[in-house]
Length: 373
Image (cartoon, rainbow, N blue to C red; front, side, top):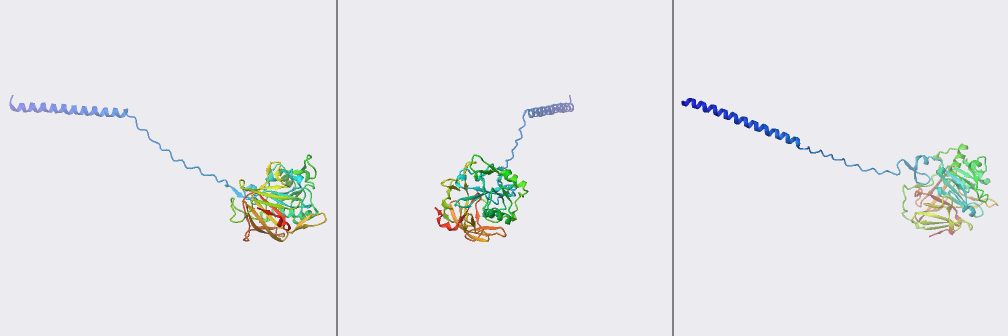
């Protein structure tokens, strides 16, 4: 074989070998690719991690939301309660009746003043008496109590009256619910287990029923309410004042009121006739956040010993007690405009703590007999 043919043969063989090698390489690469794809199918996908959102803090519920401060007690009440017209009811406080008083611990304001013969009579004011099941015993009206009720534009409830009270009711056009009128049997009932006349009782619902039958408005008209005092939004310590953990008010030789401050309850607990002053229905001792002693000039109006007080277009002095401290105050009253206001020693309208208030309308002639410790 000549040289030329040899060269051609070698070239052909070389080409065939190269083709085989290239084909082998391609097949090998295809096999590798297939394995990679198979392995990929066997690997489990990594699950996605879901990050939970950070919970927002629960907002604090404002206990005062939707409420307003009561113009009578300073407590936070619903707008519906604040819009209600209050009731003022005469409470028998002679010692026998004192032992059977009911519903008195539910009053927002309690007045106490002399009636006659050394006995005191009280007047309880309720902003909303609807849930008070028993109130009493109920006694007769006195003309200065008509004035106190008028200051609050309250519906005045009583069982009996003096001629002076009748005249004052007529003159001041005070809406009243009398037990001796035709509405009496609807509102009042006697308890046969107790001695008359100290056995007349009522309830919040009965008073409201009577007012409705008499067509009295039961919605408060704030334009007819005297100013009296303002309220702090919350319990506030007096900046100054004399220490007063015990107050003794001898209204007469027969009746002495004592108030003792409880640092635990932060109220003054009431005592009379040497005993705890109890609400025998709700089994609670009468207690007050605020105590006001209002000094008035007092005297007998007739031979029967009925008392009168110089309140109309007058002014005077007094004391205010809260949280175990006493401050001197003044008061001023104008009959024609139904104006009545208490002021602090700086001449500003008195601001008192939220809570129940006891007002002792006290003879200034007996001021020196008061003991404060």
